[in-house]
Length: 129
Image 1 (cartoon, one colour):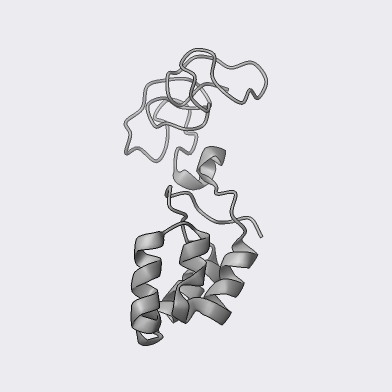
Image 2 (cartoon, one colour; image 1 turned 90 degrees about the vertical axis):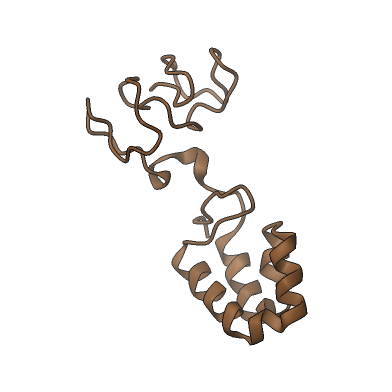
């Protein structure tokens, strides 16, 4: 395994890369499978074919609960409770003031949460139930 940030080869599954100090699977400059330099917008490595997308990188999965997000969106979505939970305070306050965009915004957020496509404030996917 290689660091996605600096390309240094990693031994085992370390918490941080000893070469650059970043979390090993956070970054978009190098392939985690072979260590070759990649384009930040590439979805696959041109050398080994490994997937480079967000869903394949463990560092881009949120620690927030998908179940909690879904339940908050269903029961308290009109008040933006699920967005407060995800620490998206700006949009949470907007949802609170507009009662969830008159219910439409809250319903859309509920569907996004159920499908596992919702992201937290850092842009990480909320996939773990």
